[in-house]
Image (cartoon, rainbow, N blue to C red; front, top):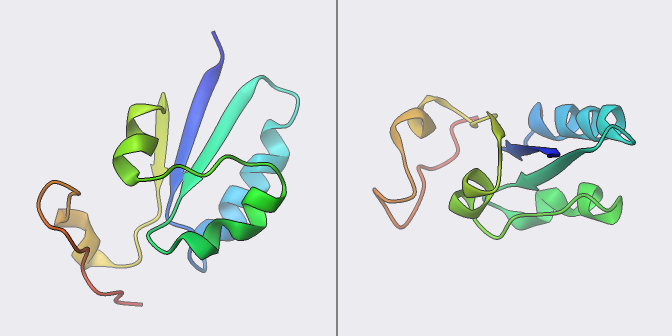
Length: 91
């Protein structure tokens, strides 16, 4: 069974980390899928063939391992079920 890794949060730190992770996982039988609240941030990874989840819930449900890079402390208490909108970016 192949391992699936989800990466949420493609900001200033997250995008380079996910990019390097995508490089490291090539040919290892591990699937990387990404998600970001603003979908355009996933563009560079999508252009490389990295799948982009339609929602955070979709990403979490499909991942054996989930890595999160929230943009600030306000995100640590937010869940998709608790609000229609996430907190405003704090960084």
